[in-house]
Image 1 (cartoon, rainbow, N blue to C red):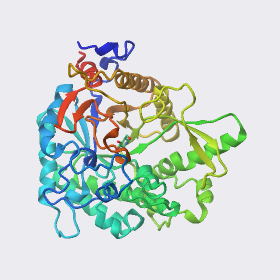
Image 2 (image 1 turned 120 degrees about the horizontal axis):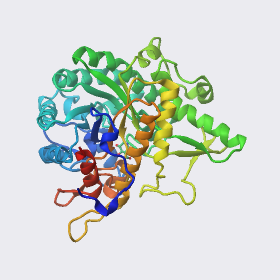
Image 3 (image 1 turned 90 degrees about the vertical axis):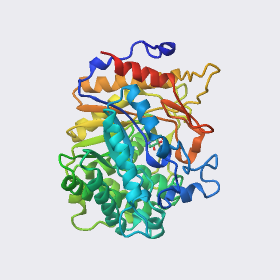
Image 4 (image 1 turned 30 degrees about the vertical axis):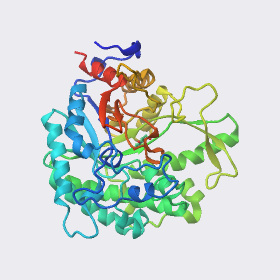
Amino acid sequence: MTNPDQIEPGAPARTDFASDFLWGCATSSYQIEGAGREDGRAESIWDRFAATPGKVRDGSSGLVACDHYHRWPEDLDIARDMGLNAYRFSIAWPRIVSEFRAQPNAKGLDFYSRLVDGMLERGIQPWATLYHWDLPQYLQDRGGWAERETVQRYLEFVDAVTRRLGDRVRHWITHNEPWCTAILGNFEGVHAPGLSDFATALQVCHHVLLSHGKAVPLIRANVPGARVGISLSLHPLRPASDSDADSAALARHDGLRYRWFLDPLHGRGYPAETLQRVGAAAPAIQDGDMDAIGVATDFMGVNYYFPETVAGAPDHAPLDARVLPPPAGAQTTAMGWEVAPEGLCELLGRIHADYAPKELYITENGSCYNDEVRADGRVADVQRGSYLARHIGAMKDAITAGVPVKGYFAWSLVDNFEWAEGYLRRFGLVHIDYTTQQRRLKDSGKWYRDFLRQP
Ligand code: IFM
């Protein structure tokens, strides 16, 4: 068995987990597919954003990315050879729908149909995410997610996709990380569409959650035996100090970062203190919306990367709170994110205690490091392998403590377009040479493969 540089001697074994546990990797359409102008794909908000000078650090875009649109058989071969039994991918809305087309784009649907067949032929269970941030630009031109109309357009897209793939795909994720869609895209302005308005961000958030709630019964109607959930990006939160000011700031931050999503998704509505705090920026809510959002799902997807330390900050509207950089001396990744595997166990324990979702899946977890291809062709990413092994260990601790975690998807299968960071940041277990499009299994990928091969 490969043991690249003794990645993590004390790591758990696959046999520590249930035999039907899912082991996968995750990707998203805009980050890997490329083929930005092929087969009738329409413009997405990320095409527009990336083409705007200064928005993406290296001036790049997803137009070519990993060329997965053409190279998917090779990528799925790699996934199979790693021993994955599940693969989480997302569907590019602009490949399916455009303003000039009355019917869904057959070529776009055909692509995902081939991709799904490719997974099934290789013994890999497909997990489809319906929205991972690539909104058609023409919908943004009409107001995007801030407009209630977009919920209806999303449902039409979901209907078309689930009708076509629902005979083979049982597992559906309605949205990836609504916090990022709403806050990074519409308040902080660092993601597409690049807006900076808090009230808009909260309205976007409400419509995204509403579209989730309305999509769940639609998917169930179209897909026999469907299992539907949503993936949230979450962090365990720590106060910067034991002062009253920092504890109060932490509670305010928690209200928007955690409870604003999890409370309504579990039928409890938006947290009252946060609603009061946001005041006039609160979203317009129609009768029935909160019931729709609170629809029961089959699982909760958790995307975990790092914990957040929160301090009171009177100059930081709207919550008078801010997230601090990692504490001095903390281990960090190349993104500057703290490496804290125990945070995963803590987070899972909290979600289980607060909401008790029937099943949880880690739908993303991974790390960014500045990889180099050595002269012998090896990518010796010991730190990423260690991150992976230690987080799998933390997940095992959560399961031992009674949290019903049923699967794990490493982010990401391949290096890819890391949004506003462009191609400067690598998260893959497989290295991509963007000049040649050569794929190369990193040592972390070899560690995962050997972990999965354990009898
Ligand atoms: O690359 C992203 C992904 O698209 C969403 N979750 C976090 C990842 C790393 O930043």
